[in-house]
Structures are given as C-alpha cells and as structure tokens.
Length: 414
Image (cartoon, rainbow, N blue to C red; front, side):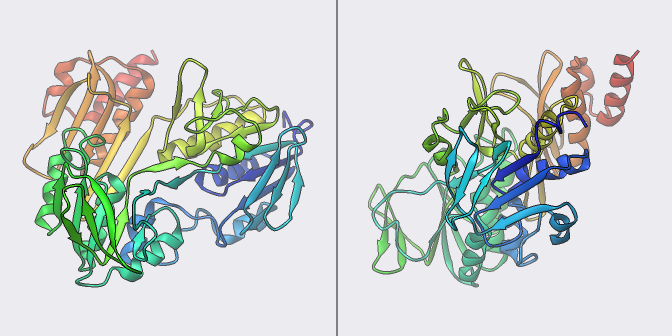
C-alpha cells in the first residue's frame, strides 16, 4: 500500500459522517496503522438527517448509527466517546481532550462539523427554546411535542419545514415564522410554493416577512415577540436559522479560518499533516473558497481524503446531492444551479410530482425533484460528464432522462 511507510497513525477529531466515512475508506483500502476517532458525544456516531425526520416522529428514537458498534472493534478503531478536544498542537500533531487524553499522530483530521446558530435576543435562555443539531436536541424536543402543544418555528428552511411536518403529524399546533417573502424560496427554486401549500393544508400557519424581537416568559417561554410588538403564543420554540462551522479549535491552533477551516482541494491546511473535511472545510484558495453543508459532500470529502492519504488515484468528485422528506413529499436536489440558469419544468405544475432542470445552453447544472427521485441519478451523471444536450430533448415531455443519459454517455465514450 503506497503511503503506509509515511502515515502510520491518524487521529480524527469529530465522528460525524465525514470522519466515519474516511475511517471506513482507509480500512477498506488496506490501511493497517492506528486510527483514533474522537467524539464529543456519549453515543455511537450517528446520522444527522434523520433527527428532524424519523427521530422526531418516534420511528427511530435511538437515532440511526452510521455503522454498527461491531464496526469499530472489527476494524481496530479506537473510538473515544464523550471526549471534547480542547487543544491541538499543529507542530507535534498532539491532541488533548477534556478527559485528559493525549494523542500524537502522523496525521490529524479535523472533522468537527458545525453547530446550530442561535438567536441572541432577550429571553433566549428560557426553557422550551430549542435548536436541532444533535440527538440530545431531538430527544428533548420530541418530549415537548405533545398533541395541542403550541410550537413556533423561527426559520423556513429545510430544518424548519421538516420540524413543522413532524410536529403537525404528532398533533402540535404549528406557527412558522420566516423573515423572507416565502419559506424555502432561496433553497428550493420553483417548487417551494408546492411544498409550502402542503404545509398550509396540514394546518401549519405560515407568516412571512416578519422579524423576531424577543422571547417572552419568566422561567419557560410563553411567546415570541415580533418587531411589531405582537406576541405569538408558544409552549415550545425551535430556532432553525442554519449552522455555523466549528472552527474554533483550528483557529486557536493558529490555522487560517473564516467561515470554516481553510483547506486546499486535497483538504490540507497550512500545517503539515493536519487536514479538515466535511461541513467545517472551506475548500479552495485565496481567490475563491466554498464550504458545503450537504451530506453527500461530507461523504465525498471523507473518501477523497482517505485515498489521498493512501496515495491512491483520486476518484471524480461527487456531484452535490441533498434530500428532504416532509409528509409524503420526497424532495431531492442535485448539482449547483444559480439564478441565471435556464429552467425546464417536467411534470404537472399543479401536482406533487415534478422536476425542474437547470441548464446553461443545454449543459445541465442541477435539478430539483418532487416525488420524482428517478430523475436525479441521470441528471447527476450528465452533470458529472459535462455533457451538452439538445434543449429540445430536455423540454420534450416524453424524454426518458435515464435513457437520454445512457445514450449520451455511451456516445461520449466512443
């Protein structure tokens, strides 16, 4: 195995999907050295997307483990749970945890992920105000979502709307507050109105273009005060306004940061032997950097880093992909479209089955699908290939995207 003589020990700080994927990829490709995986939580590493779906609904109250417990023993992974890393010495690559554990390694990988953003407003420390980022968050929130409970959600992105769907299904009375003109408009082009209408039909009260001024109550939250002075009654509040990267440890260690830990396309920081992957990695150079919070990016970055450490050929980078489940609606997004792209609508505009394709002169840049997951894989393949298609083919309602992709990719190989 190339690279094994140089790298004999690797410590991962953070046990989310990026870190666990990298560990799996290393062992699957023959790495025999020592692997230490450090988690700040007292539970097996778990998947985060189900927290606002299956976990809140009670279908998976214990969470969804990323790997079974036996995986870590079978693969000789030293899994340290409940250890918060408090110090990183980049010169020696020594890691120190809150439990006093010290570990030096040939390589340190920062896979520290992110934390939910909070509102710093009067009353923000009242009982009954939640964010949703960890299993403990989901478990505590789930205990409050009783039938008839008055839930106010601040933020109409995917977390806010997924929590709304789960809460209404459990019998709560839900008010969703959104600062913009419509929920999901910034993240779900074209199809947002369809999804929002489903929420209204299920009883979610949606208020837009509102600003929150404070939380009311003495010990427990009783309401959310708007900038107009109006108070929206609440027994429970969820703040879903995005996440911030956990780059404090890296910054304290002297690594360049700024909306994430700065790394190059091989996930290298400025310190030799220190890397960053997943949500916390701001990839690029001094002229342009991009940080992605997609689950697929976390998986991809873990695999790519492992292959780099092993000296293996780099696989093509995965096309960004994201999904959300709300009621009976399955929403999937692929690619990185922008507002200037041309758009093609496939399916009935009035139904809950439709796909919007984004392209630039026939070259696909992305797609958003509502209950049409079959369209996502062929679009992803075409984006990865950089294929330019006839716009008429994209517009034709009888065009089978899977057959189109197969035909196009076969022609490109000849």
